[in-house]
Image (cartoon, rainbow, N blue to C red; front, side):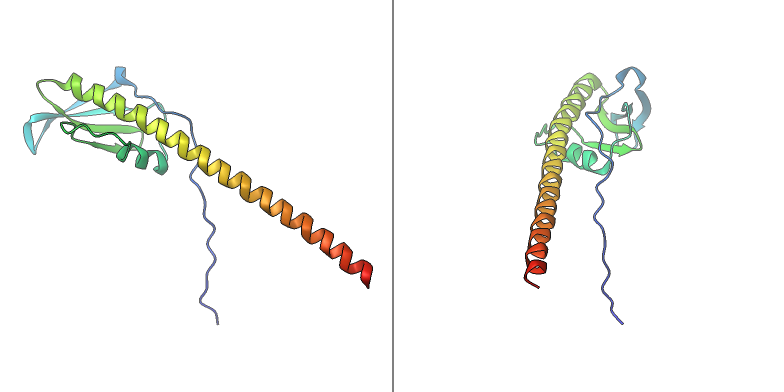
Length: 139
């Protein structure tokens, strides 16, 4: 009995660039880990897939004063400076914009790889068919 299992790699559903819905943000309250921070939830216009969330975590920019993000469903939660939350919201905008750029580049790369894979499969099927015809004619 074999213990080998075949798994199909399935990409998450792709979506376009996401945007923050700042007009619906909600201040949840003070951060229990430090009263100099406020917890702010900012909704997105749609639910991000895991690839986009990874791009948000690693957008390729670093702002030392920014406390990072947590994504819950279609909402991003940040810890913002209680005295100047606008600065952290602006930084979040930059992070989302950069995450969109990185995400769309990765989606294009995934699509290119998929197109190349399909073209290679079609070429192989064509070559196999030609070889099969050649071998049948010799019989």
